Length: 95
Image (cartoon, rainbow, N blue to C red):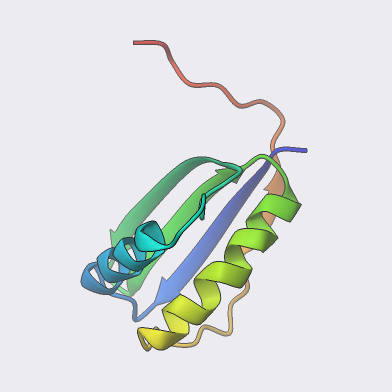
């Protein structure tokens, strides 16, 4: 079941986000397997992340890889858990 994940990450800068992505992309294998779409938005308090995942299992597998990398980069801890919502319909416009 396709899901939408929204995470609010207060105190995280765009530079930290870029560092995290660079490290994740350098890992062997398909770190982002199951991710159908990703958007990061800079806001006054930090960043917000929106992902579309094939299913919750793919998202959780990614989190097990991403979390230690973010911790190693000293990302601020957030008490707020990401929200996960079932997607009714997902499509991308053709070019």
